[in-house]
Image 1 (cartoon, helix red, strand yellow):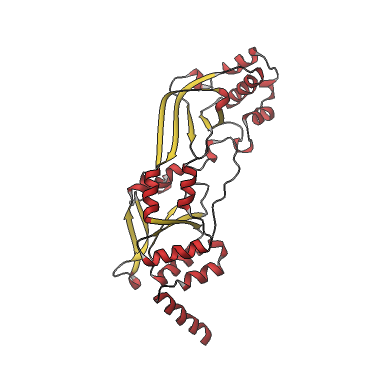
Image 2 (cartoon, rainbow, N blue to C red):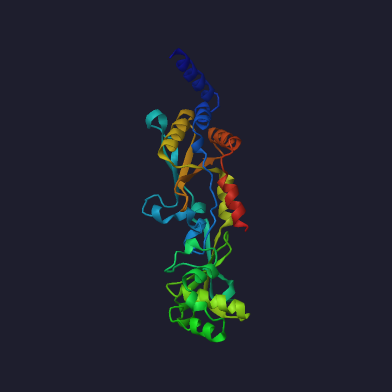
Length: 300
């Protein structure tokens, strides 16, 4: 008991003089706090692509009254130990995503790599060819112009049979072109399969959306904050909060886009000495730098 009390006193003195001893101890005792992003191998579903352009305005956060704000904890006069909830308005975060739209974009059927909808489990397949070979062999049983025409005539391929219905979409960090469809995936995939083997072009046209990351907004964010990825598990977050409270350092946090529901983003203001010290510790402990990660994928 005496030893524990002595360690507590030493830790308190260290924190008073600018060393976040509680945080250092937490990192040593809770390795699960450091939980970097993992880029999973993807199938041909657009839903598998991480929607980084929505990071600043996630749909499951839009009901909150603090839209466009970062929420966290820091010096708050009158709160317990003068440490409580704080928020800061950040329009750069709200504007982090970009969307460019081309009304009449042209491509060939071979340029399309995936779908938004299908009766097949799109995430199980690495290509359209693999999907149609497994689930729709009858659509590719003849490699002939007639079979190609038969598949292309399927009414549910609405990028062909309708105007302003289905559309194309790309996420710049992913690079692939998806057909955002409401049907016809197997006939479309079969058409692509046959056309490739016949060496026949199938021109397509339609609306095209390209989602990206606003580099100016990202530069603004990373100028003012060090941004890290860590576990969002409640025990890890409670431990981190207590360590930050003990050190009296400001931090903000935010959810990440799906599928990263087990992680969160932590924003540490560079202008605040104690927060900057925490960032130094997290860098030294190899926590993932989300700002660097986003800069990297924004140039892909």
